[in-house]
Length: 207
Ligand code: GAR
Image (cartoon, rainbow, N blue to C red):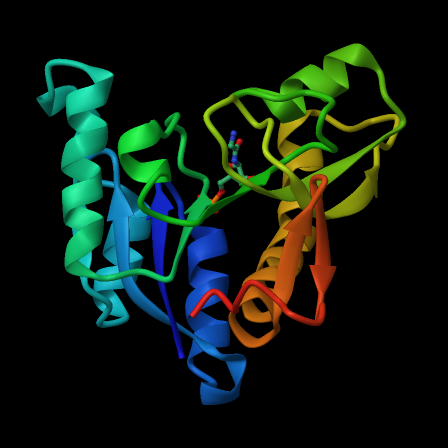
């Protein structure tokens, strides 16, 4: 089974959906640990209650971004992840982490539209009629890595940020669970920013 570490910054509902899915051995992935960038998150409490190892590498405890990234990479190493999932993790990962681990992220918009920390607010302010969510590989840019999967959500005339984000969260969880399971179970390759599933001579599974 592929070893997955989930990184969170808050509620952790995507993480909780992954935990649920991973309780079935046929899923192909095991949640080895859940980590956060700050103390006191609801997600860490939830993971601990579920009996999953947790850790916190507080961003504020390090002199700069590079030292924090190095500390995070060290913590990750303890859990030997085949895949790191950034799920509501509101930090930019640097080469210290990205050179060592395969990392994916879930983003609440249809990238390349509305990258960054306020995707739902920005989509609503722009006035788009459809938005959605994206699962992508993480590279050193902000939400710029290759897209793995996307799902569309319509914007309703009376939506506010909370109502739109809630509908996005309903569908993004299912997509994230699906993608993590596929990366764990299937052979795949990445070519010209496209994921090819079950490709012959495949690079590898995530695990
Ligand atoms: C999710 O909607 C995720 O897409 C978003 O934060 C939320 C976390 O919810 N991520 C970003 O905005 C990343 N820029 P959760 O903690 O309940 O999973």
